[in-house]
Amino acid sequence: MDVTNRHLNQNPSRLPDSPMHPADEVLVAQYVEEADQAAFRTLVDRHQERVFGYLRGMVKDRDVANDLFQETFFRVIRALNKERGSYTRQGKFLGWVLRIARNAALDHLRSRKKWQDLGNGDDGDESAWWDRLPDDGPSALESVQDMEEVDLLKACIDRLPPEQREVVLLRHESDLTFREIADMTNCSINTALGRMRYALINLRRMMEEAKRLDHLPVND
Amino acid sequence: MHNGKKDILLHLYGEATDAEELRSLLRDDELRQEHAELSEAKFRLDHLKRERPDPEVINRILAAAATGDGLPTANNRKDRPAVSPSVRLRKVLIPALSVAAAILFGVAIGWFGASSGTGTSADGPALASTPDDLVPPESLYRFVPPQRSLTPASQADPRLAWDDASPLLDMHRRIQTMRPQGSLDWGEEAVPLESLPGQNAGRLQMTGTDNQKR
Picture 1 (tube, rainbow over the protein chains, first blue to last red):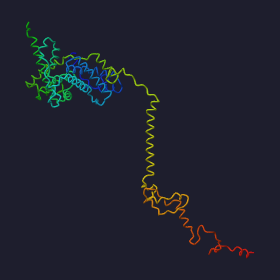
Picture 2 (cartoon, rainbow over the protein chains, first blue to last red):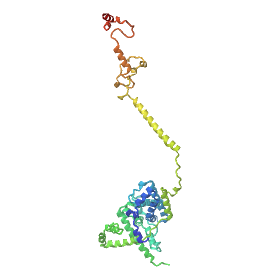
Picture 3 (cartoon, each protein chain N blue to C red):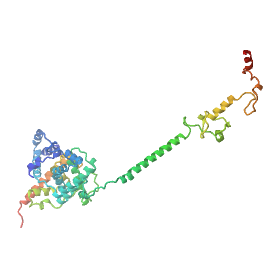
Picture 4 (cartoon, chains in turn yellow, green):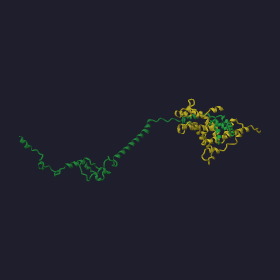
């Protein structure tokens, strides 16, 4: 997808309802009340990249992201059909689905016991988990020299501190506003903005470093 | 975070739209440098290709949506068999009738209990205070004067007493009223009317009158 498409691909939750482009709320009502499968398919088509991109960036594994994506929408289907109270129809279908996706991702990460040594002594703020997560693996720059720029950028994103990575994913993959990100991640909007700023600064530095190493002469 | 840097970020992502505010922020060298660096990183992120899940994952989700329960294997589940009328009669009608009968029985018990209950009701029959107040059974066909005065209904207690207005008492009063004040009494032998003192006052001298007319 080129940059033009990405810019035009605005979050449809914020677009006005129209016959050509029914709002999420309309589609949800058609599915729940009329069992309209086409309406549900439209919802999945509309949001699959936003949800999958977030999950893919969170777990750094495409297969796992596929499983979590499926589990997320299974939960959505169950909730819409049997526990409609959990979806309050406030025009935030994507945010609701992303919360479910985030819970699924956190469940997966917990199941991997990645957090078992991090839970002691935190103050209940979920962000503390992310802040204390150790950086993954060796320097990103040692393994990304031969990558294409897009792949290099993805590798750099994967190596961001988790709390910064999540804000980048929610803003760039899921098209949430900083206010929505703050609500979802239980932090203030200033915290969300701060994480985004550091993420952008870190990404820029990593990319520059990778390019600098890439242009260094290779020792045979 | 510095407010200027926060505002730079908001402008960068289109969440603040005041152009004049942005121009004033960019007059600051540090903020202008910050804006340039962040814009470069954001530009790279905007060029990232978005990924989609595998098509088979989408198919499984849509299959689950068709069943409505979020489980794609659920479409193999068989429908519940129809409920036969006899089962409906046995499982619905009979229990309902049993409950109704139990309620009616309870209401009837309650009604009889209230009608023959404590006797404190103003409309209810009076109760005898002691066993002596009870009228012997033979009085039902032959009058037997009560041994004691009747207890008024308002002072009555647990056991049933005869009402003052019973036909037997009424008959007794009438007999007492009709009883003559003299020695004549019920059960004595009949005596000629002429022998009774003062009994001739009402007799007509038929013979004398008839003779005079003749």
